[in-house]
Image 1 (cartoon, rainbow, N blue to C red):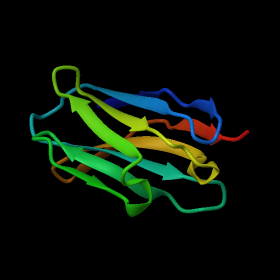
Image 2 (image 1 turned 180 degrees about the vertical axis):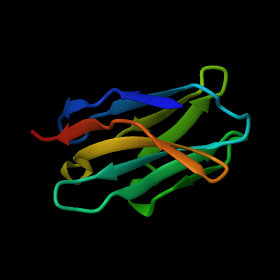
Image 3 (image 1 turned 60 degrees about the vertical axis):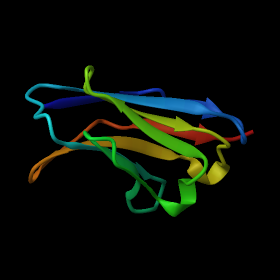
Image 4 (image 1 turned 120 degrees about the vertical axis):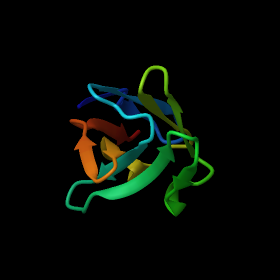
Length: 114
């Protein structure tokens, strides 16, 4: 299984970005796809996850601003990020969990700065 994340970049405070992560390989029908982030000098933290059946969960610090979605036909998960703040600056990683196995993407850098 491989994950390819994309969509990061530089954006001004208040702006928006959309991250994508495409999974390839042996993907079982029931799985969980998630986004994590790691800011400089901090631990990696969970941002949001979505199950293959559409169940969602968000970290409190992104509720109302970020939306996670997925296209099961493309094995792709998205993260729409609105009202971005400087504290959202981090490397964002996607994660695919199938049963007890977890797979990580390579990360995409999001920088929120004026």
